[in-house]
Image 1 (cartoon, rainbow, N blue to C red):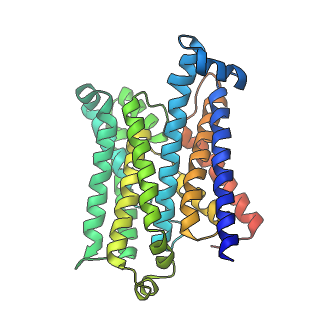
Image 2 (image 1 turned 135 degrees about the horizontal axis):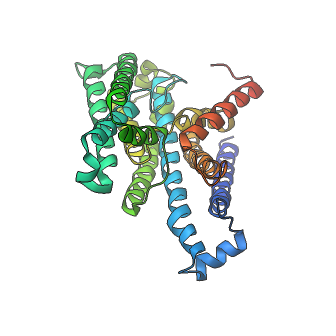
Image 3 (image 1 turned 135 degrees about the vertical axis):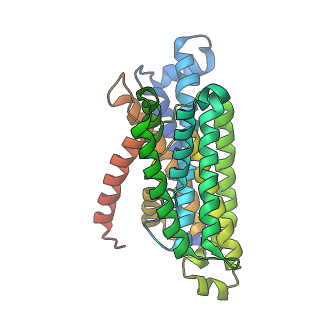
Length: 336
């Protein structure tokens, strides 16, 4: 029985890795300038100095790598939070992390921060905003060394509302030129010119996957309930704090680089749970790969749907993710 389950997990992993490679090559060749696969391979190996080489290596490949890291990271954060809270509606942005990051970026833009800190200005301010919210939510929800999950969720939602209200206030009183920058950032984009940031987020995302896998059995136990997990030998409080910090850190890093890209952390874990089951040893890996595939595909669609203009990728993830999710639930007859 165990052998059958392991074979199924290996099969799903190989399938998703193969699909990720196919989607990566597809995204590489599609855009305002179409580059067929055979020509693309030629330009990748011998086309240095040509416009096609610049398009492939300097425009599309960085977006694919960033989509891989951010899609995987947000999906992992969603799996961890849903397993920890035992609530299918929880996602990385429910706890107010994205609101805090967006508030940090808004304050940066209206205060003229970009001129002072260069290209790192927005990611740094977004990350600091996310860390501020994480700290507030953590402190207010922890009493006597015990983290109350229901309290954590409610405080996170309230903090998210407060951050959204402050962002609307800033947008209402800010200058028109700053307003465009705020709106564009909030809608999310994978256009990141700095290769160091992309390398950093790939490292963080893969590190998050490895760390979450260490907690896979603890997540399986927590999904049964805190009391059951305690009787199974899980150090509940220590594990809850570690998982909260992991999911928050992953979300904060992703949001600070790409802006707010919703639905990945909510939809992808649900779809993978329907396909591979609820065991976190395979669910984490499958969700990471699927999150990467989903975001790369959505970004490709955002680049080509109204060529030569480009849609914010957050618009596509919302439309596609929500529609696919409703369809999958209807087909499977799942109930939540």
